[in-house]
Image (cartoon, rainbow, N blue to C red):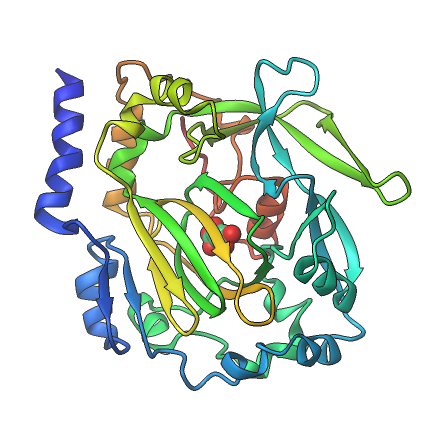
Length: 363
Ligand SMILES: O=C(O)CCC(=O)C(=O)O
């Protein structure tokens, strides 16, 4: 009975509001239009020609510009063996089960970090993806190349961004499915970002479960990674679905996660250099990237506080409904992750640093 209701919800939100594709606006909306047509409907859109005036769009195509401006900056470089941080990987002690892994974070001079991203060595994937308002701190020298907020979004949302982050990566880095408790204005400066999006109504299709937290540590000397469980042990609620299962495992993954693979297709969007994606709060997203001219993908995103309003309450109610073949264990509040963002320690501290939305991810 509940299953039927939940499945008709997936269909109905697409019929009455979302349609089959993400809206594209050719110029920035007014704040009223943005609020009325997108924020209040919790509906994504892509906006072109909203950042054409940013010097970053031309300056950042040249890696030596970035390396010169940031020549003396130490930045937090995230290192993984295969490009998947904040993701599920085989458990170090019981490889037939999974754990939630965070990257090794290495303070690195920016020019060296950029070289590692643009000319990746075989054994290492590097991603600048610190999410603690890093654009205004670690990359402060670049601030005048972009706007410090998105004016029509700040107007519509009634506040300035809680955090502004810089992302520099290559084709090897992926961000696994998760949701954030922020309104996200995600501006691509160089290259392309490829997003898979699912609305919050589809929460049961993500098979959110709790996984033990682990972390990579990397030794420069041996050039090897070690995967270790966090001490004291901590559990992280995370989406179980990998939308692009490795070759040879597709059939198995499809049968483990039928609600994802057999249900309505996720919205698939590519955000090109010069475009902004409005990614509404609580939408599940999976992200890949293609490098631009300089050999990397660069984006700046603005996280604005979300309203913990009636749709948040509806979401919690929906998530609490038991659904065939999905676990929905509850965690005591004290053990809950800060889920202002992706729930990794990094994100957690991001949320703490900016004293952002501290809410428990109840799964
Ligand atoms: O660009 C990425 O890799 C991930 C972006 C993301 O998850 C976010 O902005 O919340």
